Length: 450
Image 1 (cartoon, helix red, strand yellow):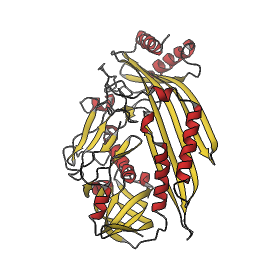
Image 2 (cartoon, rainbow, N blue to C red):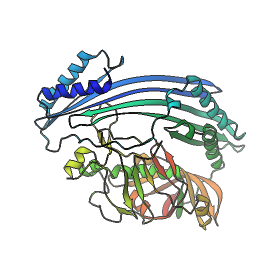
Image 3 (cartoon, rainbow, N blue to C red):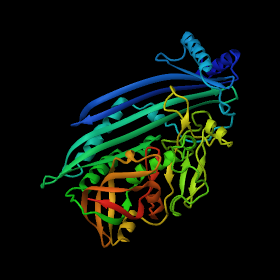
């Protein structure tokens, strides 16, 4: 029996047990990851997974259960029956919730997420790319002494979502990624690390050699770094650094965080919250991006949404539950950590819209003084409720429109919202790291300590 047929049968059985609603989520996956060292395979992992979860609603009480199916779904009748029992019985122990529900059927978004070349890729091809990744970093410059990690991963996932309101969706998606860390050293005894990454649902989007060279270039840019005195100065965030700060902001755009009073954007809808130069988007329909899929993890179609326009907060992202609490509709942002959990709220492809004109070099040339920040350490430690942060940075000092020397062991501190309010320039160099993207950002005076 096909997975969709099994899911439909589970929904029927749950309704026959007195449930008013039922939702089945099935995820099967296959993947391979290879790490290279010294031109050989250092580690290789081949994985397969199959899991199923069931959510039921009975007397407005939610029950949930899941099962792992290492042998597939064909011969697991007893396990499935136990899972139905677990979900139905579990509903007896939860509190009644007037907002509990499942979504109605809507047509899925038409997106490109499946590459046959990735699904059928040979292990030898992944090994070849991992070795090439390491070699590309090492051969870039004689000052590159080591590659600490050169890893390439490929895989495919099949998702089935069926519920008692007519949702009956199946889709298959692929991914391919590469990431590497390079270590550079100079004659003065200075050592610096650089990192780069690329990921897509389409194989042809990944330039392995460029990723290796990018990591080495970053490491070399920081060689010979010096400490600086405390200063209040404009800064330019390279795309990777901007992404790290943007991820903190994304958490506060979740309606779930707002409802739990864990968002520094709570109560600010319709207000100017960041620089008027910023348009911030969440778009699950971008072909081949890693956050793209036809529906979210409840079966609601994904969409292209403007969350902040001209610096004004236009709204939050929702799943079915948070939408019910706010008397609105789901934005297609239900997200599960795995089949083992109920859906929360998460972004799809979240990014700052680039400006068509200025490059990062243009921004550097516009400054009489400043710092180009190429790396940040500890951004994840920013307070998710207040937005306050204090993180280590590395980069290059700017004088009279030119980068003059690398800097190290500096600390930048402030508040996430205040920082984004100070944006004075948005670059044209949008880069995605995972499902979050940003161009370079020029930010007005920030506190930088040595």
